[in-house]
Image (cartoon, rainbow, N blue to C red):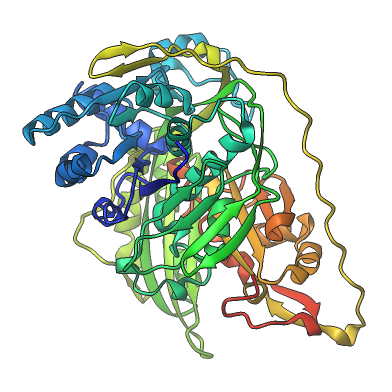
Length: 594
């Protein structure tokens, strides 16, 4: 087919707003809805749910809430649905959906894609090492889930067999959108420039309203966040993308909001590796064609590696903590004294029992002085990690028990009782050849033939663009401005890494920002968090840079004791950093010059 394909991004995580589907169904000519539900922690939660009940282990509310409220309208409109809501039990999810479809008198063909779940074969991978840290594979009794990130191929096979709804387990988020494109246009598996276009469209959709004004540097432009529009991608047969949102919704779709999402949670922008294609986003062009419509072109692709990333989640002890408020003179000092008192008491008991010390302790203070006086208002978090949940509970008890001995001004919102120890779910990642997987594709229980395409030889590595050099200026010609006046930025996480995408408001600013934000400077800015190296990448198409901070999240996710275990605050830290630029280049910082 050659008519443009319209795809709505209806979910970016398990817990996203259920009204997104109704909103997107108002889009004229909508062809597909895609729903992303999964993260590493989500997989471990679903694995534990399946252990308790063999009919669980998927995003139950996808069926009971989202589909139940919209299935009839979806069927009437002829909109197809692609979702990884199947989690670790896609067959149970599909069966529940069939029952719901029958309840409404509908005759929808529901497909299931399996093969990502490697938990039954975990013993085969006992000799693997973690692909980032080099650590050995945890013992089998500690592992909760093992899932490969699959690509678009088996989803395309299900669509070609007539499926109206396709349920998968763990797949690459963007593969849902790519599969829709390959099916609709008949794109071959070896036209990599088209595959990268479909993957980029999926990457822009996969986090819902983050492409339409959510999590955006200039967030005020999004208007009423309660009415923010979810993203719609209009994709042409040639791979051009128009990113937009439903009419009558709030939010904003601009090159900056779209660019921030393009850079979100990627690594090397010239080698963003997916199962179907290696993406090069470095020369992507973003152009405002109409209000809330941005044209996206210029992505390039190379042959995939033939390897799939596998993520295992495993039990790595227990953790818990307390967050409290304290105010007055020397509030930080008072908070630290209280937390240390609870920790000292708990450590004394552990020592008396001959038990090991805490594996990790994290104290973090947030806030400061609202005026020029000595008065402070502080939020303080105190948390610990230990192999034994009783040791974590001991810390919570001793900290609470020290409350009447604390310096003055401590207060806390109560009502939920004392926190309890919770399991630490750690991530272990490694690679396997795609041929390791045994795919099974079924439509209404009937098997569909599917074989992975052969992997061609690798093409040449991309040529790195030359970074423009700053024009020399006299000392009197410089002005110092916060980075936010000069650029947009967004940060996110991948395991124990964080990335910060920085997009210049004026292309002329880039040489000066690049020169200011060196690896050494960035290491100093994030010294309180950073244990690893810093990398920088240049994207000439969007006059942007992507910054990678390695080993910066204390393990990341629930394995971390950090208040911000996903690096969401890092862009805000960076945007406050002063940068010197020539005085003649300073421009209005409200919406910028993009």
